[in-house]
Length: 244
Length: 363
Ligand SMILES: Cc1ncc(C[n+]2csc(CCOP(=O)(O)OP(=O)(O)O)c2C)c(N)n1
Ligand code: SF4
Ligand SMILES: [Mg+2]
Image 1 (cartoon, rainbow over the protein chains, first blue to last red):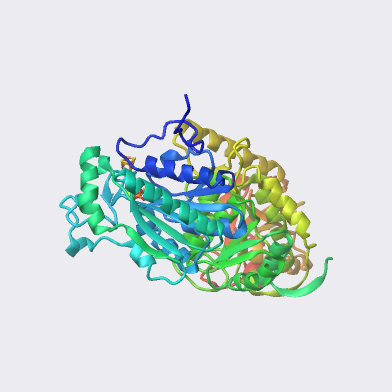
Image 2 (cartoon, rainbow over the protein chains, first blue to last red):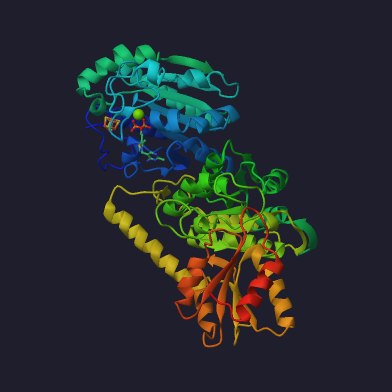
């Protein structure tokens, strides 16, 4: 029988270890498919953040190094500048990219580094067990905001794509999600565009994927999908913010 | 081509790095080492290298982590408080086995301290340069020439061990001007060959039939993490046998032995010459690697005649003192002669202390 769909060769078949309903797995699958379709998995290098994404480190078949928490964009800067022929992308959560690594995030974008940044925004610190992130929604409960995020105490969710959109250098900024097949396809296209921009030497691309964390949201995979659509995507509207 | 030039310490270090094949530098301004990034910003582009002024020391060390992970000879530098910010990145280099060279031109501390020369970061340099109990080879130059030679060598050591190497200087070494003979410039072909040799582990992209480049500063498996630590520990022990660098002076029948490194060692040597001219039997141990520490040199002291081993440092509290005591192994008396805060130790201070000891007043 003809195989019409197979697993990307960039995942080696080992167990990914993400929770049921987690979208990290979808994101890695899409990245892998794009790398294969562009025929560049042999020149790809991932700077992996600290967070649940680390669960993938034994599974990805392409080159990678884990950067200190928040510093992936700086490490990617060093790697790309000294290896312009390597396709360099970062893969970072919201705690990593938007909190501890905000300076590195902004400055790499502002320098217009020729890298691709994949930002997994699940509104929570997944790996450490559900603490409040800069992207946690108002009223959303976290283990360090047991009464829910209160803007009077915690401020408001940070909109990183919009902040990066204030800068002159970035060439491509898009916010996508993986809540349904149509959006999964859009996510894949966004990743492809980000990688193609880099191959074309155009400069900095930023793809924010709004995702869920069923485990730390305390919701079933099904309910967290609903929460994602009704709340997360309202706070973080999908769309292309810039495409130069 | 090896040519003799008159150069400032920081610039000489930067030039030596370039000649050793360093093609990536990232750093953040801080006195007294600004001449390193400034020089690199002019020099690296001339040889096809990359200079980046990072937005912080943290960003800079992580740029070097990334560049080093790609197999390029890479360097950063800072001073004291800036080195503290780099410590996580240095620990990651040690954990993920990413070679890198960095320089600390020490200033006063703790805190932001002073901008003048000190040796207040000895513990940080030799004992805990970041979390996780890793070790590094730490080279401590006493002259600009030595700073040049050690920087040149540091890249080979870093690459051999796939581990960070520290050039531990201070404000004097960084800013003093001295004549130096520069080492030969590695050709573009040599630099490319060095990088190519790193390709087997570098994360520059590998085809599916090759082994992927995978640099991991940690493991999910506690067993693998322990195994990694055991392998690193073996390497550290190897240094004690093979990589100690030390200058020993007049240890035979010395009645007093100075121990000093870096700028302090120069001043101590000058005091030693003065005292010896007066007929005093003074010897000296100058660690050129403060890690691995030259423990065996202390076995050459004749403790039957040696009245005291004098630890001389620009640090209060004394820090190298503990390595000295471990090496002396309670075979003789140990005392200190110290300054701090960015104040240079004076030859007169050392001479006075020595005369006190030699005339019988030992603690
Ligand atoms: C310097 C440092 N601080 C804190 C941590 C602990 N830590 C590990 S993952 C993480 C947060 C991850 O959250 P996020 O970036 O949102 O990724 P997610 O797991 O949600 O995908 C933190 C704080 C660390 N490893 N290093
Ligand atoms: S904790 Fe959340 S982000 Fe982490 S794997 Fe589970 S669902 Fe995914
Ligand atoms: Mg998160």
